Amino acid sequence: MKKEDFLEGIPLVKNEEDVIEAYRAAGRILEKALNEGKRLAKPDVLIIELCEAVEEKILSEGGELAFPCNVSVNDVAAHYTSPPGDETRIPREAIVKIDAGAHVDGYIVDKAISVSTSAKWRRLVHATEEALKKALKEVKPNVPVKVLGKTIEKVIRSFGFNPVVNLSGHQIERYTLHAGKSIPNFNARHALSRIRRGEVYAIEPFATNGVGLVMATGKAYIYRIVNPKEVPPLLRDILERYNSLPFAVRWVRDIRRKRAIQVLRYLTKKGVLAAYPILVEKSRGWVAQSETTVLVTENACEVF
Image (cartoon, rainbow, N blue to C red):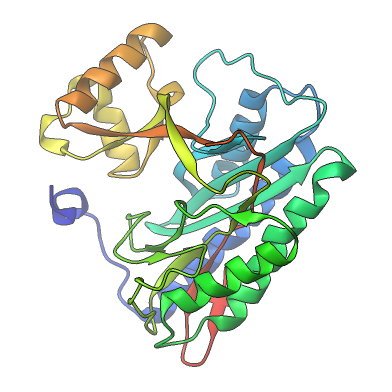
């Protein structure tokens, strides 16, 4: 399905400064939301409360949701958002990864933080923070993406951990969370793409004390519409509000939990939806993540 099928009827922001200001606004909104998430990321807190608090903060500050708030704990690396009625709580000892996205007029900012509930795992969190900081210094026009990957890997390994090699950063376009190019988290010699002025990227190092690979589980609580012409009435509100952006099972109203999951799985098999399976570290190592979104400028980048 073409991107134009989703964007039909959506007005474009006309000039570059308006676009940049939309990104800046989304970044400010998301920073406030993540601070709220960080405040709540404590042992025994319900994950659904954390997810909904971050999402509600984005909306109350005037932004829109670019995707469901992900709260992935310990060996769960990515794509966990609470299903309806989730009773999962943050354990006493945990690395809590809060990954959220906000947009203004379709211009998306994607950020993530990791919160360690004990001193034991703060070094792992710090490894991703330092890797991100060093990678941002490499961002400028015409730099190969593998240069960023090499820097990220070098920093993470200097802390005694492994980068997660099958997770990567990604280019972002209007109403498109994952666009053409990827930013590897390791020295990917085969990655020949170069970053260009005016492009927007989410850069997100993942580090682990495990083998550095993630695998998909059989569960998914996040989906995305890929064929809008076949969307049933149940998801019309989702299509109208979220376009082609990811949505959570718990956002589907007026349907029982088990029924919702069954319907969404069926629509995925029919090619109407794409699923985002929960990802776990292959050796059950614990995972930390740090992420921000940047605009490539003339000589460096602007961090949102």
